[in-house]
Amino acid sequence: MKKRLGFLLILFLGITILVSSAVGAQEIKKGGTLSITDFSFASARTLDPHIAQAAGSMRFIENLYNTLLKYKKGEYGSLEGDLVEEYSISEDGKVYSFKIHEGVKFHNGDDLTAEDVKYSIERIIDKEVRAQHFDAVENIEVMDDFNLEITLAEPVAPFLTYLAYPMNAVVNKNVVEANDDSLNDVDAGSGPFKLNVWERDQFLVLDKFEDYFEEGKPYLDRVYLKPIDDETARTTALRNDELDIILQVSAKNIDRLAEYPNINVESVAGTYWEYLGLNTEAGPLSDKKVRQAVAWAVNRDALNQMVKFGKAAPLTGGPIPPGHWADDELKVYPAQDLEKAKELLSETEYSSGFETTLIVLSNPDQLNAAQVIKAQLAPIGIDVEIRSLESSVYFENLGNGDFEMTVIGWVGFVDPDEYLYNIFHTDGIWNQQAYSNKEVDALLEEGRRVSDQEERRKIYREAQRMIAEDVPMVFLYVNPQASALQQSVRGFDVNPTVSTISLTETWIDE
Image 1 (cartoon, rainbow, N blue to C red):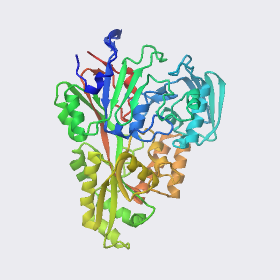
Image 2 (image 1 turned 45 degrees about the vertical axis):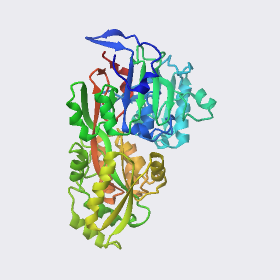
Image 3 (image 1 turned 90 degrees about the vertical axis):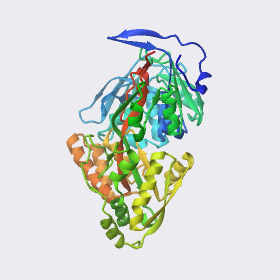
Image 4 (image 1 turned 45 degrees about the horizontal axis):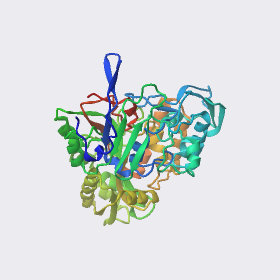
């Protein structure tokens, strides 16, 4: 029998009987428990999809719920129906008509109807975290239990992508109201798995939802998500057959883990981009020339080699990764130039240098990156103090703008609007750098209205050029998305967005 970590043993309430059904030439075996870990899981603080911002919370939540549409497996940037059976868009791009599947049940047995969809979108707007996805919504009309229309004030090019974002989930209105609008520890979903137990900072257990609307799915009986902070502990547990999946494998372990015969390491071009964030509101970093000096002093290629073992792709322009249709292909900072950095500083009141503080999580890669950046900035007279903060304190500081520098990243975006609007628009909900440029604002607003992809590409290229030159962030690199899986794991999609929604179709071959 396959070994499991000790803490899994208490979860086995009986003997799992594996049954199988033939699908094409492949025999899918149903049942069993799959265990998965990731460094991001430690940041999970809520099970409410409409307020979740940390990656760990999102990974915990996404299999509890459904969205109207979802990311298509194996095709980054493509969408397909989830709750939606069929839809149409009016010629003027303003009216979206949706027919949702009949017979969808919430985990408590309630029927999911178009009223729940309307209520969920209104709740997302009310919670503000992703309200900007729905800024243009003028009216939501429920036609009957399974049909609704959403009317926009103006066309919004990425609107369908917003509806597929895993946290724009449809929640059970009755459950929300019964819990005084708090879903922090509550399951109000209809997804393939339902909540068994969440021990905060320890583990999350999800059980198969027997009445899931996709017949025969999910295949697994149970999913166990366990935060393991220490990277060595994660890889050791996988090698010892005590875990099934490490969701994100660090660059240094991609080749190492691939050497083990019982482990598959699968890697795709990723969306996890990391940056050196600069608070533009006060102090030396409020001066654009100082920020540009920092950008020229950072050696991205050296960082990639020293921190990412050469596995990442350096970002010399904006954050949209190479290979994306909106990749800017700009080289605003093609290579480190210390002389240019010193010259820029000499034109400011900080010509003799200054002291600053860089806050960071205990993530080893980001700690290492902080140390390398500290060394790279020293020759131009910038003395960096690094402070490693506990997760909740760190994100509170970041959200309040209580920092000077930070190394962190974003992951999971699909449309270029997701990469840019909420982070770099003056009123963006995640504009933690307090960045404001009215010309950039206008471009990002235009990018939402234009439907032609080539026109949008030009708009976002110009926006990224301006952002890179203003330097609210020093863009560092985008990581590959690599997962390590036991050979027995089948059907799991190693997704550029790091989403685990393919657990619906994942099974264990043993």
